[in-house]
Length: 68
Length: 157
Image (cartoon, rainbow over all chains, first blue to last red; front, side, top):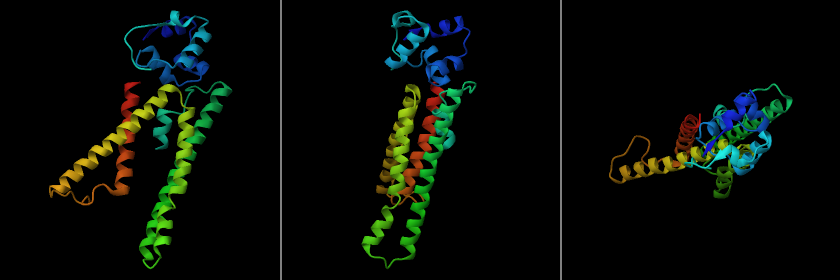
């Protein structure tokens, strides 16, 4: 699944570690989501949406599934 | 092993500049240490039980069975800690562990089957005349799990 996580993070000048800390996950998870190797769980996707104050469909775009 | 768990899990916060991150990191580290401590206790109990059984062949079958089963108790605590650690992981870390355990389990089945087939054909590897046996199975699983964690980490790096 494609996503705009890297773009949204860059707008706020956060490092992957910063974002990981805010979401309570590992930096590896953020990197895997940004590189589309891993799709976040639904609860994590909602946390991301809340953090960036955006609906999920504006952050995540359906594409080739990389596994949930 | 502690390194492997830490590498694949535990550190939800790579930076420790906020107190909450430090606490989460320390909790994960404490759980990893507990987990490995129970594994060590299980291994020591297993070794001591084997030694006692070998040195005291006159023991009744009941005592021998009881001694042989003693490693199960610390093993259960190991299992409980492992499950707690797994529950506290985020989705990706949990997936890495599941993939590593699956790799280890299937790999062990394949290796064990190959050894048994060779034995059945009369081609016996040294020390493996009776297959992997319990110790060999654990060791094989541990090695394959370690390899599985490294492979999964490389994939999601």
